[in-house]
Image (tube, rainbow, N blue to C red; front, side):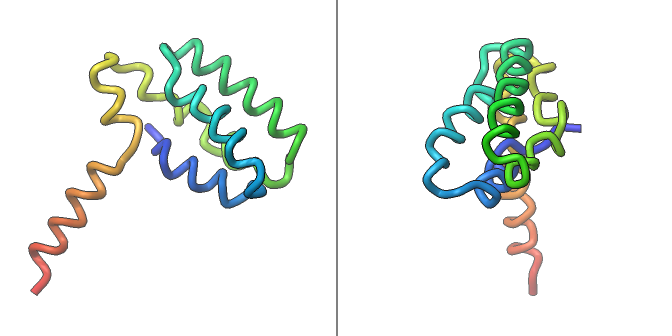
Length: 102
């Protein structure tokens, strides 16, 4: 099951001090924008190691997602952008609710 990269990013920022967001974003982007799954797994492990040492009680949201966050790497590169987040699906559902609401 794929976890939404955007929702995971939102969860991470909620548990991290604001001054560290830029560095956190750089490390997180190394995971979700990696060339392939192996590079992403290495970046994931580096992220987990680095941030669990810096802020263990606050940045435990990423391990909760586990490798489900990287499931989109199992698909062809052309499909990854749309599979990485659930934003397009949420947008469709929101529009459907808007159109069917009396």
